[in-house]
Image (tube, rainbow, N blue to C red; front, side, top):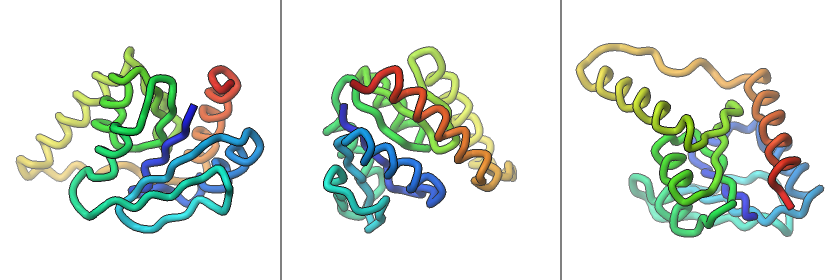
Length: 149
């Protein structure tokens, strides 16, 4: 399994959680973004910077991702593409996307986008906090215990 991290808008609170697991389990990891971000120093992490442009990082993640890999992303359309490749996706708040729930998340995201485009103010997600980081850590560790060989 390769771990892919969508570096766009990646919360700093998650970096030490990921780095500990990457080091402890020697997980091959690729951090892909259109700007320099760092999760930490590890021989198991490769940093890839893509050219500027909408969804360039997403396209590369989908291209490189294989069945059974794990992608950490808050991007629901990217998660949908990953699930269609029989890979796994977890968002920053600990939601494990699956074939059972991804279409529902995608439909809700598209509905909210449509409402915003019509001029309605929807607010957006609440600020990312420690509680979200704990939910992510729990889901990530449960996934590793179940699926990482």
